[in-house]
Structure formats: C-alpha cells, structure tokens
Length: 203
Image (cartoon, one colour):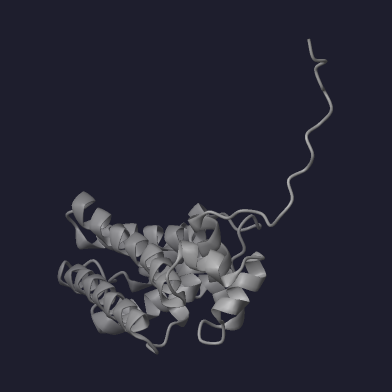
C-alpha cells in the first residue's frame, strides 16, 4: 500500500483569474482615474495583469464595458423613480422617496454613478446614457411640478430649475463621499431632504 503524502500541494502559478464583475469593477475605477477616452484596452489589461485576448474573453470592446457600467447606474436610478411612483400617491412623498433613493444609489454605486456623471456624449454609448438621464430628469421634474400644484412645494421657482438644484446637491455627493467613512448614507439622505425639500416647502 502506497504511503499517504500529507505534504502541501505546490502553489499554483500564473496570473489570478477574474470574473466578469471583477473586470468591470477594475475597469470603472480606471475610467474614473484616467478618463474613459484616455484609457485603452492595453491600460485595462495591464491593470488587471491580463493579456488583451483574456480581457476580450469577458468583454468584446471597451465601449461594452462602459455600456454595462452606465446601465448599472441608470437602472438603479430609474428603479428609484418607479418605486416612488408605485408606493406614493402624493407627489411630495414621491419626491422625498426619490431623494432618499437617489442618495442611496449614489453611495452604494459610487464608481458607476461617478462615471455616469462624467460622460459627455463622445460616443453612441454615452449619447444613449445622456438620453436616459434626460428622461430621468423629466420624470422628476414632472413630480416636482405636480407637488407645486398640490401646494406642498413653493411655486415661485420653476420645476425644472428646482430639479436641477436638487440633483446638483445630490450629485455632488460623488465628489466627497467615501464608503466606510464617518457619513452614514441613510442619514445623508435625510440631511439632503432637510437642506433642499424643507426649504422648498410652500409657506
């Protein structure tokens, strides 16, 4: 009977493997650090320690990575509006739900939302994302306008301007929020409400 060998197996050599989600996460980080246009497939492959052919195994192109990252952010933001519309009959409550939800999305998906806010329409993928952002803004503006008609939000400022000011504050979160830091994401949503919507209430 052969003696049993209890010695440890030799360590596996070679580059670490990545799944599609890990490749996406690293790519978004690099896009945010260097800029999408300034980042090449070679840059991404080098960052991951992969060959370009191995990277193409996960994604067919750089634009495919960008599209998935932007969809991740936009799908989550659109779901916030969908959920608010389904849950609340009063526009003011829908708006409060959207603010809380948008802050939650920004803090939970900080890298992909940061990338979304930086696109400038230099490609078909970016133009499509900008179109979806425009529709999102229009949906929120309609809710703001409805809240004004209800008399719950002051109407001496246009609904479009109010929406831009509101999301200007929300979107600024990507510039300074750090996951795991002192700021609690749930409390941050309430802080934004106190600073913005409470100030927009009709007197």
